[in-house]
Amino acid sequence: MSERLDRIDRRLLDALQHDARQTATELAEKVGLSASPCARRIRLLEQEGYIKGHKAQLDRNKLNLGITIFVQVRLSQHQEKLVEDFEQTVRTMAEVINCHTVSGAFDYLLQVVTTDLGGYEQWVRRLQRLPNVNTVDSSFAIRAVKEEGPLPIL
Image (cartoon, rainbow, N blue to C red; front, side, top):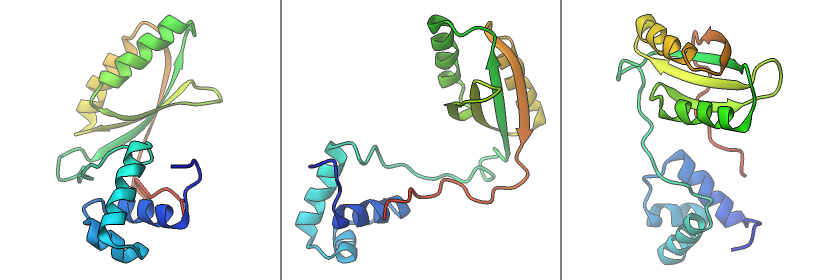
C-alpha cells in the first residue's frame, strides 16, 4: 500500500475511528465496496500501521476517575539516561493517560486521571520524589469540551 491513502481508505479509517465495532459489510456499504474487498483493505491498513488497534472508550465518571489534571513537569537535568529513566517511570504510572514532551518553560505535559484530590496528592508526591523532577505545575480540568476526537483525515 502506498503512503498516500485513496478516498476509500480515508473513508474507511474515518468510519472506523467513529465506531470500530462495525462489520466489514456495514463499512463496505458506507464506502461503496463489497464486503470482501473492504475486509482486505482493512487488513492492509492494519498491516501498514494506519490502524494501531481497537479499544473500548470507557466512561471515567462511572469508573470513579472523574478528576482530570494536566501536569507540567520540568526536569532538573537533561542527560539521556536521566530523561529515559523519567519517561520509563511515567509509562508505569497508571494514573498518567497521556504524556508529551513539549516546548516552552516545561519539558513534559502529562494528563492524569484520579478518583479524588487525595488520590492526586498521593500520585503527585510519588512524582515529586523522582530524582530528576525539578518543578511540577498542575491545572485541574473543570469540564471537558471535546475529548478523544477523531483525526481529521477526510
